[in-house]
Image (tube, rainbow, N blue to C red):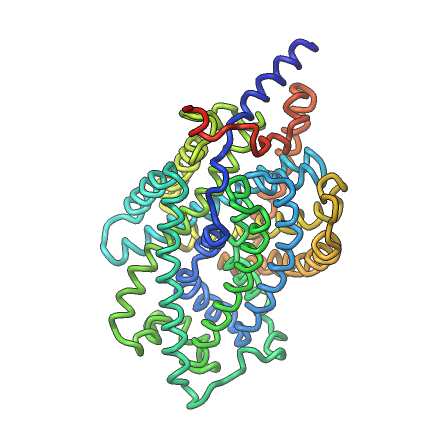
Amino acid sequence: MPERAAAGAVAVTAQVQVALARRTLTPFGLWTYGAAASAPMVVLVGGIPAIYATTGVIALPLTFVLVAGVVAVLAVGYTAMARQVGHPAAYYGILAHGLGRGWGVAAGMVALVAYNAIQTSLHGLLGATLAEQLGGAWWVWSGIAVAVVGVLGVRAIVLSTRVLAAVLAVSLLIVAVFVWAGLRQPAAGGLSWEGFDAPGLMVSGIGGAVAFCVAAFMGVDAPGSFVEEAVDRRSIGRATIAGALVLGGVYAVAAWAMGVGVGPDVVAGLAADPAAGLPFSVLDRAGGGWVVVAGVVLLFAIVTSMLAFHSVVARYVFAMAREGVLPAGLARADGGARVSAPRRGSLTQTVVAAVVVAAFAVAGADPIGTMFTWLSSLGATGLLCLLLAASMAAMTAPASVRGERPGTWEWRFAPVLGVLGGSAVLVLMVGNVGSLLGAGPGSAHPLLLPAILAGTAVLGGMWAEHLRQVRPEVYAGIGRGTPATHAVPDDINVSI
């Protein structure tokens, strides 16, 4: 038995000596991944009109501000842990160090389900949009998108970052033009501030609005998974928190401009009427050319959001396989000690996306009403739970993780505030998830989402216990398999 454990330890150690290319992503590149995953164009075109139409909450701009604040505070503990742990499978590593190895594996499995769900849901949205505009079956367009994202996913991350940054820049430009078009021609003849009135939050639809807003922010935590490749680990926190705050401001102003442009009292009705054409009817005031550009950029924004989530999933697969929690072959490098992209993790996510798209196509499911709505809701709920868990891990992290001079704000106050605010948001989200799914009152279908997440976490914990009993050397290395900075030589040194 000792010989078996020793042999296993050697095998795991050898497997760990594969690392992602270090000092590759700048702070701006990290921020780009988080913002591109959230996809401002998708929120403008699909998210904001859907929230108005479904909930009728006029104070949507204020709701965005409040949710952004909660997400930003939750991100403080998450990014503090991500910086110190330095693990590409961020939630997996964070909970393994802060709450225990079993919790780490459970978090890793939930993260894989959540990120895959969001990434794959976008294939339904893209396929349906292209099928409506160009004809053909939605799943054909989705299949093409799977292939495109798969090809980009195995390339060096620098290429993906450039693509994401270009699309994100144009997306933010279009949102700015939309805001200008809505505010320069207010429906009431002057600017209305009803969208920021606190009494507007005391309405029956506020729970659903909060649920939709949380979904809009999912993806801002993506920088945590690129910590091994970051030029500066401290930039993980700045990129994530700035992403939440900046996007919160962008979404709040866009929602306000939509209300001002058509009138706060009628925006919900117009958003629910396809003939009204929101937000394009407002954007058209700046010139018809902007509408055409916005339609094209929307498609690219969906693809780049897919690519951002794809890259995160690939790193989770790579990092967990590197420690033997997932099949070790998924972390094997095709050549060199440092890899510019986790190719096998990328290919794994591509296969998962292809299988899910095929399953929904064979089942004849609605690509938006079922595939996009259900999978994106599942992913958003899972990621909010993980952010909460990361804040709890920050509060309980040992001194060896917190470092020599831990800050009271990021290790105590912010995590406590995040847990309190995040718990309230989670209760509202789970209690109103039916509005996200379009389920009727009293339907038990929305309970499937928390059940899936809870079941995944339990299975992850059971797998960790199995590893503890059967492969103790792997269990001992859970969350601790990231090579030291200079333990793995760069490719140029290997060649010399």
